[in-house]
Length: 429
Image 1 (cartoon, helix red, strand yellow):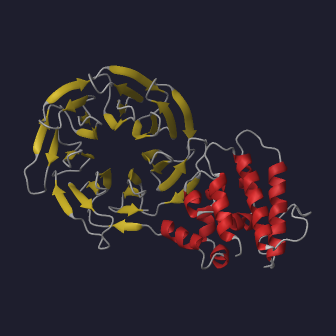
Image 2 (cartoon, one colour; image 1 turned 90 degrees about the vertical axis):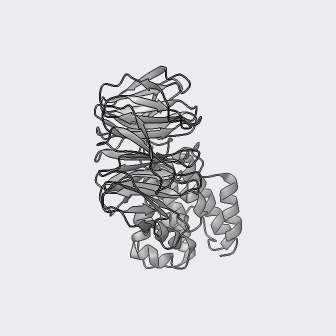
Image 3 (spheres, one colour; image 1 turned 45 degrees about the horizontal axis):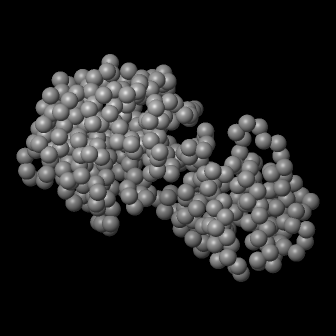
């Protein structure tokens, strides 16, 4: 279509999908872009605001003049309608208008997860009518890429742990006792290495800055450190019960959490035990390192604790969940996300320990979290994946994960999303 390149450039320049904009502002910008589209394509010569207030799907008209006119009228109705609380006006828009917007926005911006129209893009991309309308466009190809992720097969047990190395290689830990290493650039989809770690399930894994692999099992009281699959591992001993969480700090220290309620700190170079972080009253469920270098631990005691990385001093206790805190993720600007069996996700500041927001899921218990800095990804026991933005209290996108329960999530530096599943596979988007 004439002027399509200019429209794309204009969309990027105006940053219509910035997270700082409100939903109403984005709708108004969408209207402005559709008006620009109609002028560039010279498809709409009548009054661009029209007189209609409703767009009827499948009205039998393929006339672009009529389509854009009706779309603008419906957009007018959405913009001018009253907004109650956090309601998003774009949720009122019909598929006809959504399709028109989706086919004329940059794919990178759409995938950013910051624009309201993407709340329904997964549903729309599955519709036979939408597929017919979008046949041959880049959007359909992009939608198919998300709907049909790459699947990594090889484990014989549930995949409960994921980690990404500095070289973007993917490490997957399973109930089958192994950790498999994958290269996502390998079209063969076979692991490049296999570590036979434990006779029981691998509960936690972490990759050091030097490439060493740290593994833990909830049934084994020590951490095993691997250089190669064929070299006997070094053992970090001191816990009184199984190891359920692992993390590597910015300074290279290694942190291990256990069902004995403690977090132990180790030297990555020598394996020496440095100190023990004590304060939780039940099993440690997750460990992360905040952007300011502080250590954050989550426990079955329903609390999250923040610790200094230089001396292990306890800094903050963050309370608010009413059930087990099962997962953590790191966001930008010292943000930390936590999920619980109470069906909520909380956003915290690791700087002062305050809760910034609570995201209520209203579904099943959230079992896994990860973040790429701009977006938060959550996985649910019932197999649902969701994308969140800190600017919203509701998910931007839900998608059904057909591999059973989501047990682990991770993102790569190249922008891939990894999902470890109860069906023994790893899906890569």
